[in-house]
Image (cartoon, rainbow, N blue to C red; front, side):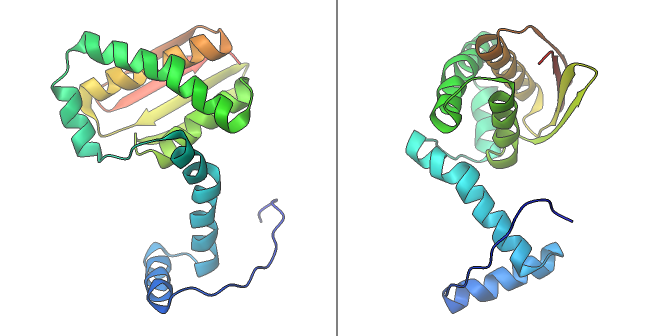
Length: 175
C-alpha cells in the first residue's frame, strides 16, 4: 500500500487519447489510474523543469554514435562539465539547494527520465552505491563515470569510487 496521500480529480480528455491510454495500461499490466499517476509524476518531477531549463531529448542510438566519434579526453571534458556545472545548475534550479538528498534525487531523475540507463541506489553502512546498467557501450560508461564523479565532487565535496564495464557502472560515495 502506498504511503502517499491521494486525491480524486475528474477531467476530460480526447477520446483518442483515452483509447490509447487504456491500451497502454492493459499492455503494461497496470490500471489506468496507475498509468495516469506515472504520466503526471514524470511531468511534475521532470518535464516542467527540463523544459524551463532547456534540456534536449535525443535517442540513445544517436548519443551512442556521437560518443563513438569523440576522443576519450573530449568525452571526459564534456562529462566533467556536465556533472560539475550543468547538473549542479539543474539541482539548484529544481531543489534550490545542494545536499545529499537533492544530489541523489537528481541522479535518480537523470536515469528515470533522461534515458541514460536503468539505475538502482542503495544506502547502507554510511555509504551510497549507485548501480547503472546502460546501452551506451564503453564510451557511455566513460561519460557516465565522469559525469557522476564530478557531480559528487563539486556538489558534495566528497570523493567517490567507480567500477565499470562496457554496460554497467557502479559509483560509491559517503553521504
